[in-house]
Amino acid sequence: MGQAGGVLVLAPAKLTLSLRVVGVRDDGYHLLDAEMVTLDLADELVFAEGDGLDILAAAGPDVPPGDDNLVRRALEAVGRRAHVTLTKRIPAGAGLGGGSADAAAVLRWAGCRDLAVALALGADVPFCVHGGRARVTGVGEVVAPLPPLDQVFTLLTPPFGVATADVYRAWDELGGPTADGPNDLEPAALAVEPRLAEYRDRLGDATGVTPVLAGSGSTWFVEGAFPGDDRTVTRTVT
Image 1 (cartoon, rainbow, N blue to C red):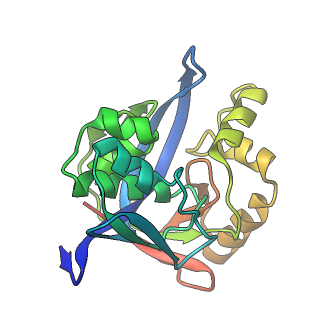
Image 2: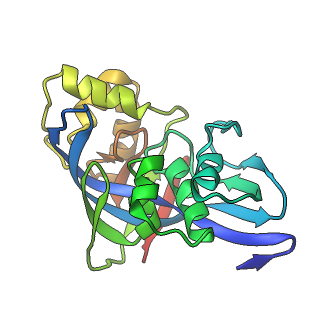
């Protein structure tokens, strides 16, 4: 899609509907069996001639534009240069794959669908390149398409993020718990960030539905549309 002064590429969020930790590799990486879907909540990237990265933070905490930013790393991975203007609508640290979605958008813009390149950028990037609805296994590199479903979800994202590495470390330290619900990382995430419980209960009380943590957090979600303060209603896209 073209836009004055550049090419616009959307970077849709991903939602992890279920996540089982099924093992740990010798190198410490965790093996997963997860179901993920793409949402209509999306960042926007505009690619123009030149070199640089401007970030417009429309939601959540500021995202630093330094060399560690996944947009810069993805451009380097595909050997391309561009001046990128990134409008953030996916909150950072929310478990919605915002950085991974941005990296995947760069790969799509560059015509690169090599999942090995995607995995080198992050475990969620292969799914974000693929999109839709899929079963994701291995450490994130095995993406098996599933039939699309038209679903609506309500998200509640706290004003803080949770570091994925800290959650997996806590999962190990807790002895690898299996959650009562569909996300094995919930007990570990709550141990790392106890404030998550307040937001879980707030969403549950408002909707009458038991919330599920999105991946390693910090977003809680329920299926169905429950608009209200601080809540985001979003739909799956194929």
